[in-house]
Amino acid sequence: MYDESIQRALKKHKIAPITLPAQFLEALLTNFRGVAPLSQIITGTAGDGKTYHCREVWIALGGDSAIWNQGAKIQRLDFDGRSLVIVKDLSELMDDEGAELVEAVARDVADPGSSTQYLLAANHGQLLEKLKTAPDIAPVKRLAEVVEDLLVTGTTSDPGMRLELKDLSRAPAARMTVDIIDAITRHEGWDSCESCPSRANGQICPILENRRRLMGEEDGDPFQRRLAALIELSERNGGHFPVRQLLALVANSLLGHPAARDGLMSCDDVPAIQKSGRADLASVYRNIFGENLKQSRAEKTELFKKLNLFGIGAETSNRVDNLLVYGADDPAQAEAYAELILSDPIYGATPAFAQAQRAYLEGDEGTDRSQFLSALRAQRQRLFFTLPDALAESYQLWDLTVFRFAGLFLEVAEKLAAKQALPRQALGQIVRGLNRIFTGMLVQNQDELVLATSGSYSQSKRSPLLDELISVPRASGEEVSIVTDGAGGFCVSVRLVRGNDIPVVKLALSPIRFEFLGRVAEGALPSSFSLECHEDFLAFKARLLRETEKRRELDGDDQAVDGELVLRFIELGSDGRAIQRRVMVRV
Image 1 (cartoon, rainbow, N blue to C red):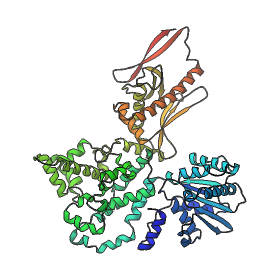
Image 2: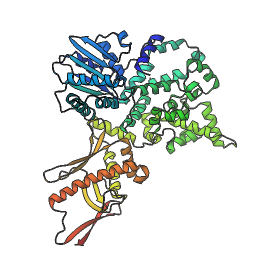
Image 3: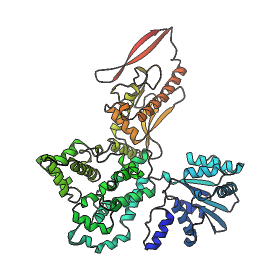
Image 4: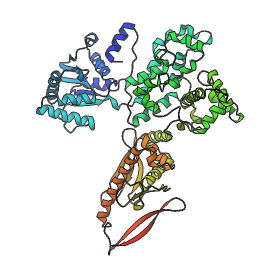
């Protein structure tokens, strides 16, 4: 799926292209059509749409598509008395070509009177590599410094350089996912399916059924929102979904079936799948996680590796499994079973599921238990995407993933972005988790941050010496709060008072860090969940200890008075709250 080969395929098969919103296209066109245009660098990972942006700019500014399709490494477009040089992939240039281009760019972007602007596309690594191999002269060094600043901070302190950088990898993939689903499922090519014989006599075509479910035509259908939530959470954890991967995800969701060649159905495969009675294996809810592919292939595919980290299908709650296993025979669950399982005869209460369920419950000798466990996995995946919002809390929707507190994480991020009041339990959970990490004890304090030390070094697992109690509600200038990070996420912020200085120590909370705090607040041992997260929070504690130590130095509280030093030990009261016991040490 490269832009160049897609253009050839469209022409060969006479298919209307899938049109997606280009994140920076309007801004690029406005810039190049303006009175004082700046040169532009488009960067990002493979598959983010760099070549697509370059081609669209070329065509929108009057370039000939036939000339573009000839594939020249460097394209030049003259318009309005100016020249625009477009390089759709810097890595295509030989070392000498790259060095010559970088030298020209460095000269022109520094010259306010230059009539030549540039549009360059490159991956992050390729861009820096070309700058390193360019001639070691002052203009190139200046350009390299500006580009590095733009990559790291998004801004530059050198206003004389007429250059901007746009990073496609920072685009929110969750929003793009919905656009891609709409563009593919509402494409005009689907009109040809109206006369398909696979739909005759009330037959269900699994491809069209998956399309219908992806579109989410019913009011309140949570499918697209839940899928977008998974992608957002994955990105907050450091994953990235280029447009190319999202296109592959939607295609696999529509066409997946393990019995088809390469695990992907064509229209010719549908009659045989219908006849086999196993159309349920084409379930869009399984295909989201690559279950239609061989396990070895799914595990090697970056897209499915990221989505399968959520453990959907393997994780569950007691209530969900009780419904799936015993709901058919339990009168108390009859209504819920009818609403959540029997209402979906295509991918829910299928004959194959009913048969495997019955054999499992009756415990027939020779029964293949793995068959029912596989069906159970598919049903958990289906319920994650279809469980109505009204039942999500009672059935503990996010317990179907390894991120049990992901729903609360998303709610906090949403409320912060909308500048609304945060859920009450969020800050209390964060503080209780921090206190248990900082002390190594099961403390229950939620209204104050218990900063403790082992007396030797801050990374000790158990810290019995009290260093400071920091108020959570604002008091005397101190405060612990949740604040936005400016990029759609949030941080835990600890505000201290030190003389006239008010230092604020922050730590960004990714979904996995938030989950870590939630699990620890519930009683999990920190080191048993994630050593990496545990070390992150101990490093955060060390930063706080440095600030409180500076405050004591200013106040003169770090010295023994009259040969006496007071140590404050932490003990747990009957209610689980940390209380201090003072011990006088004579020096």
